[in-house]
Length: 69
Image (cartoon, rainbow, N blue to C red; front, side):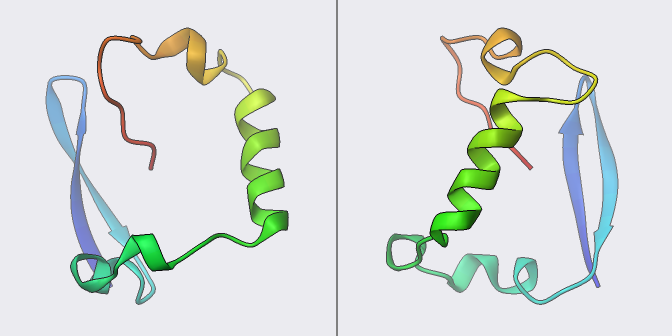
């Protein structure tokens, strides 16, 4: 289990995740990994059709960087 603290508003929230990917995040060369075509389609669809919230482009300030978890 990997324990993370993620900034949320003015505080940090604790997140516990199962799996190996996050445990090795620092050692992965992301330039050598590519998502599968179907994964890209699913991500694009999810971003364009959010459930119960505004679209990401309506939420994010275009002048700042954002990380999506």
